[in-house]
Structure formats: C-alpha cells, structure tokens
Amino acid sequence: MQLRRFGSSGREVSVIGQGTWYIDDAHRPTAVAALRRGLDLGMTHLDTAEMYGDAESVVGEAIAGRRDEVFLVSKVLPSNATRAGTVAACERSLARLGTDRLDCYLLHWPGPHPLEDTFAGFERLREQGKILSWGVSNFDVPDLDAAWKAGGEGRIACNQVLYHLEERAIEHAVLPWCEAHGVATVAYSPFGHGSFPGPRTPGGRVLEDIAGNHGATARQVALRFLVRRPSSFTIPKASSPEHAADNAGAGALRLTEAELARIDAAFPLGPRPRRLPML
Image (cartoon, rainbow, N blue to C red; front, side, top):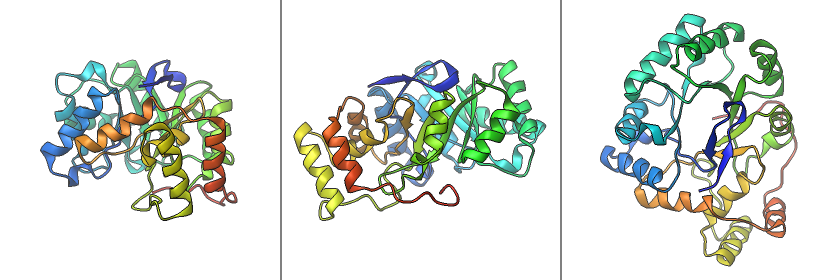
C-alpha cells in the first residue's frame, strides 16, 4: 500500500483508506470483518463521524487491539461545533471508538458557529492529546480562505470532499488551493452513490480496458485515478472482506500518463458549479 504525507499532520498515511458512512446498516460481523481485512491489507486510514449512526462503535470493535496501526479520523457536526461543544462531541466519539485519541478531527461542513470557536476547541483537544491534528470537510475555496485565516497558517491538515469520476468539481479550485497550502485532499464516495459506470457505458468500457492491461478491476482503476495527484487520498467503503480486498488492490496500481489521459477524456471535468457539491 502506498503511503503519503497527510498534510500538516506530518504523518505517512495510506492513499487508499476506508470510509464508514452507512456501515452500521450492514450485518455487523461482516462490517467488522471488512474493516479488519482492510487493515490487514494496509488500508489503515480509517474515517468515521458522529453523524454516521452507530458507525463509530463498529469501528471501535474493528480496531480493538490494533489501535496503533490506524490513522483514525472522525468528525464533529456543525451544530455541535461551539468551543465547548466540539470538545464534548470529541469525547463522546472517543468513548464510542474505545480509544483515547483521534489522529485527525474534522468539522463536517461549514456551519452556524464561528470557525474561531470550533478551532479553539480543536486546539484544546490537541493540547490535551485527544486529537493529534485537525481539518475540515466540504469546504469550498471561500470557506478554506476563512478557515486559514481563523485557524492560522499550517494548521489545517486536510479537506475531505465529494470526488468521483462523474463529480470532479473540486479540480477547478479546491484541489489547487489545497495543493498550494499543503492541505491533504480526501475523496469521499469515490464510486458515487449507486452510479458507478458499468461496462456497457463508454466510460465504463475505458475503465475495463485499462483494468485489463493491469490485471486489475475497473473500480481499482477509478480509485487510482482519484489519487493521481500527490496530496490526494480516498476512503471507499467496503461491504464485505472481498470488497475491501478489491479496494486495497488500488494501492499498488500504477497508471500510465496515457491511461490517465484516456480516463480524463472519458469523464470530462465539466463547468465549475456555483457551489461545491456535497452529500
């Protein structure tokens, strides 16, 4: 599994990680087994959130006895993100996860409370050793500018954003901003939501053809495209150990410049939207 520096955290983190949105809807033993299989295969970047129902407790079960292997991320809801509320939310997440620390803690999206208050909560948690770094999620460029000003230079470790082959809006401005400021970009929902291009679609045929050249799968090719830039990571969710193994296979895959260009042409960037898409 390829590792990269995760923004200002200074940590080396797996480029292919594991997401957990809706994982609590799955058969729990299967969900736990999928996460553990992912860890076995090097997908040690594990993402969750207080918003994700019972996902944090599922993650806690999966990482029991293996905490030091994991780069663990969770998120505070904007409605909870006052200075004191951020601290309290993190402590609840730590209890559900069965750990004493998060490697990174994120504001889930821009919300009603001043960023200065949220970030003060983050800094208090960091000083207490309950989080080791912090960042944001679903922040567009104006939000990032405000966060940079509120939090101080070099504090924001990452921006977690919606990014898949048919939704590439972050490439217009968000991804360049993050690269310029040393902020990691983490792609969530990298396969879309039930809309991954099948082999009968033009784009799907391109993915299948490239996959065949590498003895890989179309989904592995898609994941590799999404982490082609040096500050990028992705966190696909797996519903089974077999699915986790397929995702992990993207970590060692390498695509040629010509193959990247074919994918780029098959899934055009499109115009810049007025607002950053999020789910």
